[in-house]
Length: 172
Image (cartoon, rainbow, N blue to C red; front, side):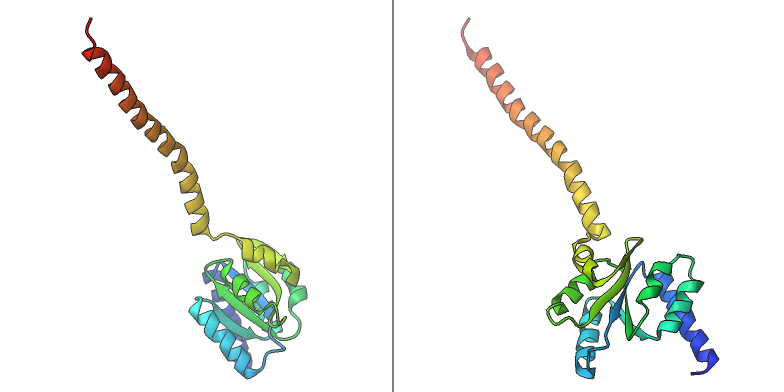
């Protein structure tokens, strides 16, 4: 491979590292062409960009990045595919479907500004909530007490009104 091509690939990987807030490193060495195509289709449907890369080129892209990816360097062995995504837990859920077969296996991940190294982190990654899910949870928690106060005031207003009406209609 020519140096210009390598430089272009490193630059593209660097752009993907900047544009996507989360990525997974996956071992795809045991997949045949048919299984790889099926995985790519599932990734496309889930809005995941899957790229099979040379480990040395990915290592150089990591080094050129502003973020310190040094703990991931040990994961760059064998055949590596990178899954770039906007939502942190989507690739983990996809890989979890395949976990029965063991292929593809998670090597490492960068999700929610944290590094996860090892296949044993798959459950933890799948349990991560996306930013939108967390915002929805916070909004629901904030709305709950307000709804309780409003409903208490409304039911109390009816009670107070009824008491006043009864007292007003009572003969003296």
